[in-house]
Length: 213
Image (cartoon, rainbow, N blue to C red):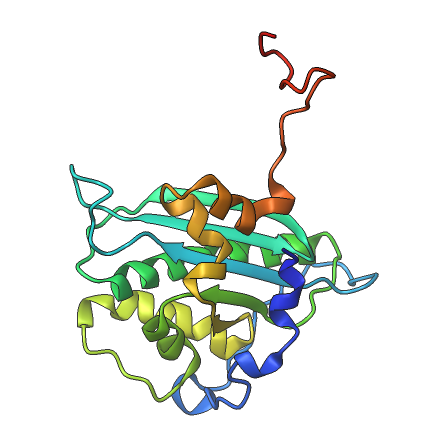
């Protein structure tokens, strides 16, 4: 699977949103000592997911796992999988926590690329399988009813207004970040991460190296 196909259709993103009425005229902060960018600009793709909200996978604390895969062009440069620090009561809340963490990682990567003198093509393209999170982070008029989520809510929406990132819906079946958050069958993992998997070399007898004949 080629991650680049995800950004071929710009209609997946809400490009007509007017964030200025909410957050004012804000832009991405560029380090003053960043060198002049040279060469062809690169694109950043981010796949975000959190495991199922039934909390069945963790019977001790019921905390969910965050999964984030970050690509620069077609190269995977960061894979993140970690149990969340808090217990959330709904998929929306856990996905918003995952989105906030992915946002932090991307801001860090964008600063590093700029300090290396590498130009960046537009905002980072985020893909999430939760419809509520996508709407809340791509539609300025969307509202939040749960106040305890407001910090993550605004810390994700602000970089969208700054042009740092944009968010689109990606079905769970094709969301690459779904594989590190839970146990999935090998065939499904191979379908999602096929180009990234390394198969064991096979010897002349048809056995993997190191296996007894």
